[in-house]
Image 1 (cartoon, rainbow, N blue to C red):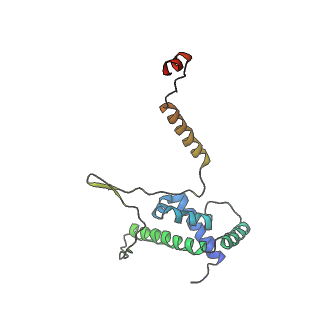
Image 2: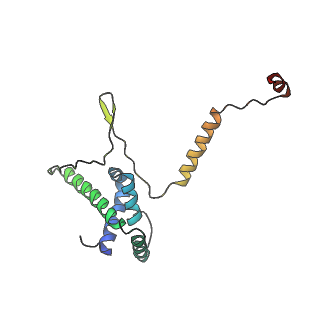
Image 3: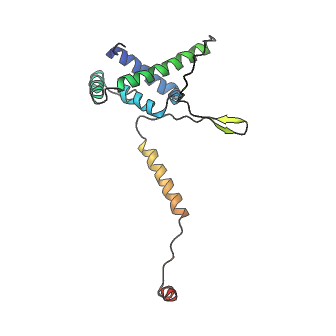
Length: 161
């Protein structure tokens, strides 16, 4: 398999950035670990300069030698989904691809006669403000559910003896 040129890397990164900005739900078709691999390798949401991207790509490839191949496979999956969607929107039909035996799609939950599938879109970095708000809400709920321990008085201590 040929190595990815920097020019190809930039074009793929631009596609991933557009996909995130315009229809981020396409990312949900990949498992979360694969989404993170894409974000880690391509950095589609960063505002790095070309030079910074060259340095970043070289460093991440040294630290994680398998990441370019893993991220490249994830990119290819997203690109195929995108192109299939475009063809379907234009009214062209494609032969359905044979599915492999092992599927990464989540199993749908069956509710009555309907099934519900939930997929996640992973952010490249945690949203610390939202995380803090969630922790505050959980703290409020825990505090509201806790019973205040009764203080022991000297008379209640004597009655236990």
